[in-house]
Length: 180
Length: 180
DNA sequence: CAAATATATATCAGTCTGATACGTGTAAGT
DNA sequence: ACTTACACGTATCAGACTGATATATATTTG
Figure (cartoon, chains in turn brown, yellow, purple, orange):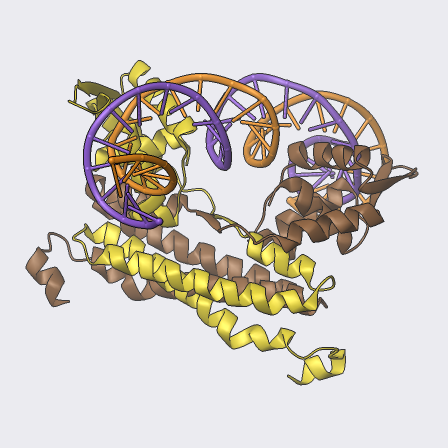
């Protein structure tokens, strides 16, 4: 999903500024499955303005920079529905951790234990952050998505805890490995 | 992890051509956690050549275009170890499916069931593809990574099967939802 | 009282994707 | 027999996106 469509989707849930969109994507219910930088959000909003898929109200604020609050137009809502009617593309999962694990094994066996410890903490923190989100009110769909995130993070965590011992026996032979 | 480091890592496991690196990343043990296009792999290999972190043997082939088989140099191995000694960055998970679910709810309730059905199939296919990989011989680390992928895909699949009913009761009230 | 954090918009070099081009061999479909 | 698709293999490029940075002020924290 390109950032343009992501912005349309977020605006379909309520008016927002570019800054708020960025926060939602970085910390909110969206954080588990999407990312976007200012460098993509602001140009996307400008383009959506040109295409008249959103409108913008400039809100002068005392003691704050002006806000630009964007709202979806009917054409924007239509465009979003068109996008969502197409089948969603495949997931894209990137993990430096898994890459490091694969490449580090032969290079530095001791590093693996530390890497896994850190990763278990990482997943536990993710779970906590997502569960904190669940305490607020949210739509059925948002709750589903956040709970999905929790389930996946917990599965990752459990796998690491239950399978880390395969790295712990040093100089293990193939025969020994087969026996485990 | 940038593509340059990814190439170094793959070459640390054995010599390869650009084409083979692309295949590994798209279909092999790496497919679960990384991606790379020709448009990033070939320039990365050229740059690694300039930096003398890899060497290249041009293999003339009859009835085939010439192959360029790349190998890691000692400096390349050192550079890889430097990269792996840094803490791995956070995971990056993008899912058009989850985004569509969030945005589609209010727009077209019927679409949700179809979306979830398709997604369950998607995860089941991923599991099968990963389990097929496990039938080949591979290093402890590779096996761990692929099994990690299986665990996560299965968790995603299970969550969808066990929780999809939250979307099925149409016109559900908040009170009803709380009771479930 | 200083430093860090939050609000808010905006730009840009560098990286990466997805598509495309080119050329050949072999397998599958009709 | 013929044509269409796929596998091998290198390479480029427009457009999208990231991560860092700039600018400016208010509030919170140490």
